[in-house]
Length: 97
Image 1 (cartoon, one colour):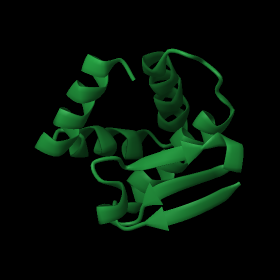
Image 2 (cartoon, one colour):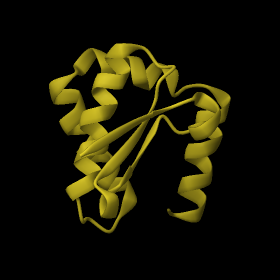
Image 3 (cartoon, helix red, strand yellow):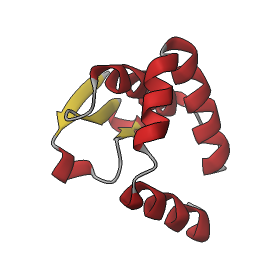
Image 4 (cartoon, one colour):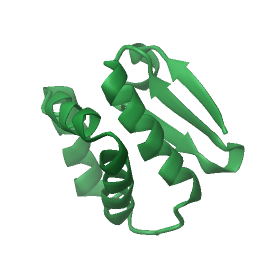
């Protein structure tokens, strides 16, 4: 698995993303280390998860990341309360993707 650390401008509002066909994940490098540690586990889970419904995929990836890095998960939740992240989530819910 390849981990690419990206600038905020390349990924925002996302904190990370997974590319299963390439066995590669991207993580924002501007985030606190505890959040990065959580995101690595979260995105790694996406590499092998074949669940179709995106919301369930996110619940499972969050569970596995939080199990290994609970503080990083909590900090990630706090950082996700920004306007750009909330707008991102709302848009995802509305288009069901």
